[in-house]
Amino acid sequence: MTHSPGQALAARFYRSEVAPLLGGAPHAAALLGDGSEVLGYDDPISTDHDFGPRVQVFLSPAADPAPVHAALSALPERFEGHLVTFPDTDRYSGRPHHHVEVTTVEAYFSGILGTDPLDRMGLADWLLAPTQRLATLTAGVVMHDPDHALARRRAALSWYPDDVWRYVLAAGWLRVGQEEPFVGRTGGYGDEFGSAIVAARLVRDLVRLTFLVERRWAPYSKWLGRAFADLRLAGEVGPHLRSALAADHWRDREAAVCAAAYVLGQATNRLGLAEPVDPSSRQFHDRDIRVVGAERFTEALVAPITDPGLRGLLARLGQRTGGTVGALPGAIDQAVDSVDVLSHPARCRAAAPMLGLA
Image (cartoon, rainbow, N blue to C red; front, top):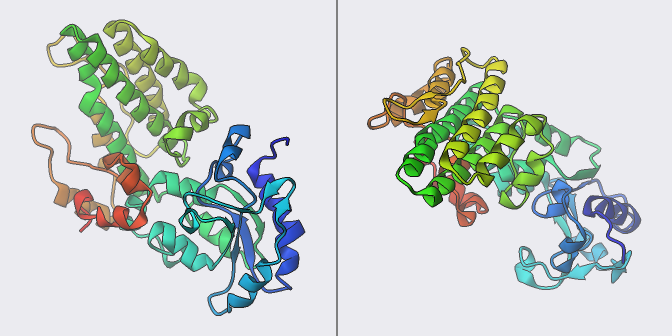
């Protein structure tokens, strides 16, 4: 069976099989949320588990879903060679089931984010929403949206407000600043393996900074590199990042990290969110180590923030011990790197005190 990309498969399945069964019931329909096909990255390997035609059908809150559920029992056994009823480890407790999810837009978005974006995304809502979740809500494919209920929510999630953007950019640069000297410090000590580990961490942080600079939601790790390749800056930043990963000597590794940070520093300046910062590399204190001095971008980006909620957050977080800038844990996926947190909305919301939000 030739692989059919999941988005197109879902759209055909909706038009041919799902919509006719709904009997004119007012609804919206889409393929959003989890799954490689939502991001458009599925391939033939994707079909070996948890794969088949999927659609979300969104009813109005006042509608009775029972007739729709009953109608969907008439779905065919197969569609274009794919099982329509199939097990999925993430849905229906792994039991075989058709994957036409019947819900409301309010419940669906609130279930993923902890809030309906049309109720206005507050500071905590933005900072507790992993970018990988925002990516899956703003990607995918919409098949039917007569009242624009999906379009309005997806538009509300298109990007951070400017001051929140400044804050997460500042936190991203701070992550770089916290570790950039260690590429040279470990290497100069003779620990090339340790230097390579630090460089790999910095490469990941610089990749995520590229997404922030380009106003794109970063997906989770499986597709981070694939999505990065589509970014406008990937052609400039990518070669330096690959050099940092491939280098055998810490000097080359250090130079590549500084070169990548230089490109991203220039791009950050072009955003006009803060006073420009010279992104050239410089000596780290009196040591034979070169860094960009990433914390300077953090200071520059924090300075123009005027949002009262963010100013209060910065005041609560206070100064970092031994640092020249404040303590900025940033957004949830800048502070936490656990699948078991980032894939569970309630656990993300419970992290509010850790981020200084409560």
